[in-house]
Amino acid sequence: QDMVNESEMYSMKYVMVDFPGNQCTRDYYLKRIEHFFANCDKDSAMLWYTGAAEKGTGNWCFKDGVITFQDVFELYLNHLRGKVMYLVCDCSYSGKWRDECVKKYDEIGVGVCGHSSKEQGIMVKVYTSCKYDQEAYELCYTQDVKVDKDKKVLLFWRGKKLASGQITTLFASTKVRCKNGREGPCQTDISRKWGEVLLGHLTYLVQGEDRGKPAWHYVLVDEEKEEQFKEQVKTGNIDVANFGKVLHSGWGEDPPQTIRDEISKRFSAL
Image (cartoon, rainbow, N blue to C red; front, side, top):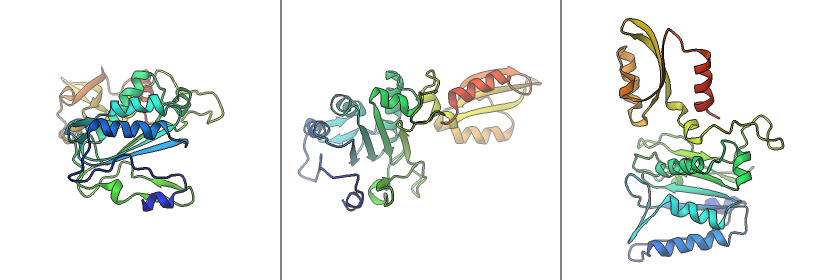
């Protein structure tokens, strides 16, 4: 409440307040969220959840069931589309909701630029207090969100590793990323996918010898295997197929420029 009072952009409405002995049903909370979205008179709405979450999904837990990302996203499309939704998930396994949002954007065909997001009226920002496979021992957004008094906005951690080991994540689609800026037509390649862009940090080029001949491999490493992959590379003996998806392979010391350009186009950060 104090943080919201410091920021002139926000006003607070309680959608769900759950106390021991006074829990309500999943449907009750969905109706409250629906009412909140349908009656939003600002350009954006922030839905903030702190509480128990389901392992493997990050779904919000209530006494008779869970609320999924799909539940919230459908309510957004039906009642808030054309406005910005800030979705703050300060709970265990919450990074899964960021991943679900990315998948949904690619399914719908929202391009990787704010132009496309605004044209389609789908403008979602997801902030999570940990990755998809982590427990949130520190409720970081509850404890330590800052206020930029000049810009009059709340500031959330992005990709920060906390003392507990959990790492915050972010998905934000509204930023205009093409060279033309906000006023010009979008120049972003429509074939690019959000899922690939956000996996760019897991794309590695491995160069060495295979059966005595120089060879190279581009591999998209499984996130949960990244540290093991790095340690194995140091040994000079590795089967890259054991650590993820091999995107391209070839003989020679270096990959052709055409392959380099393709990987850069698909996976480079925006």
